[in-house]
Image (cartoon, rainbow, N blue to C red; front, side, top):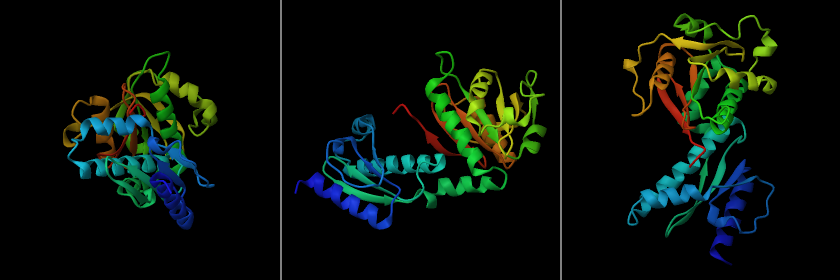
Length: 270
């Protein structure tokens, strides 16, 4: 049996034994036949190409670790979005190493950190905001990529630490029209995302405000170099309150902050 076919069969056997929610395969395995009812996700070629460029040829172990990290990030993102419900089985195709990894995002520190938000944020609300942010990061608005931020949960404290930059466009509208879990309202959110400031979303998914300026001292938080005031203020508000923040950068990268720290970064362009 061909090596790749043997690895795929072993991955399928493991996935079916543990009732995995997905099998993640590198692009180099895309043409191999696979028979299973478990969803199969093909990792994009550019993921491997990028790693080949940044990992020196003699650092095989580092390359494998980087590919494991890629699987972890994809699984974490899928779990948070709701598209992955449990453990995944991933195949790693490094230069001279082929391996199978099993990873349960439900046990990851990232997901555990976000679970602490559930006292003030309903899980379906968080997932709705994340999916909207991911969609916005891909599409932008009117042909332009724009940045925006959603502060979710603990809305009383968040509103007390912020003020309007302009009239609140959500004021006077009924709750149904401001509900972020209703996809019919997403065009409204995308339109208001062009305004300066952030969205404030209640824990049960009601948009309290848009165009909101956060009155927080961001000097106590540490964010990635090169990120601006929106990221710093969003991180800071999560340090001062029980809210979580989902920030979309103009480059299309989505970052999640909780407890004053970045807990996950999602880039759909690499």
